[in-house]
Each structure stands twice: as C-alpha cells, then as structure tokens.
Length: 114
Image 1 (cartoon, rainbow, N blue to C red):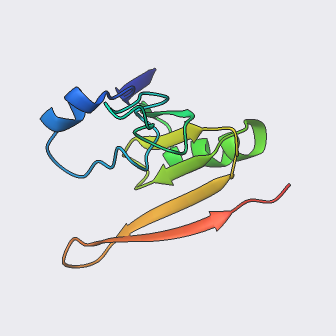
Image 2: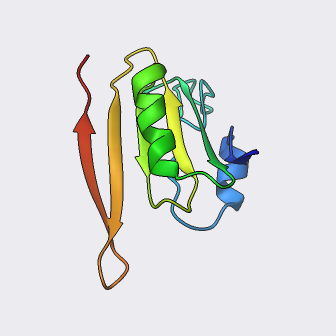
C-alpha cells in the first residue's frame, strides 16, 4: 500500500507544522500565493511525500527516475517516505540525504540527464 505522508500545504498549515519544512522551496504549496500575490514557492509545480509498505524506497526512486517525469526527489533512507515534486522545469534532480553523527543533514544532489 502507498501511504501519503505529506501533500498540499497552505501557508496557514505550514505555520502549524513543527520541524524542517521549507515552503519557499519544496513545492508543497503548489501554486498558492501570498497576500502580495507572489507565489509561496516560485518553483510552482506540486509535491507529495509517500512511502510504500514492504518496498525498498531507493528502488522506488530508481523506478520513478526511469519512468516518470519529475522535478526533484528527496531520499532519506529505505524505511522513510520520499519527497517527489513535479514542475514545468522538470529538473530531474535526486537528492540523497545522509546524516552526520551529530544528526546534521548532508544532501548530495545529482541531476539526471536523458
């Protein structure tokens, strides 16, 4: 089963979510605008995070990269949800997130070319 763990996030909802989220970058705000009529995330597009029970999420990332247009994928670990976004630019970037011994995030990004 696919479990959606994070989807659309309005500005109001983002204020209620503790932790590491980045509405200006992650595309969960889709095409929502701020009061000044500028987009919350200039990348536009849309994003969701999901996990598939009993699947190696790195294998899911590889399948997506070979079969589906996407803008960005963030992969944390095999047992964690992945973040995938779609946008007009379709940058096809995959970022693997590692963790230092102190818990700091270490991103490594690769842009796929086809």
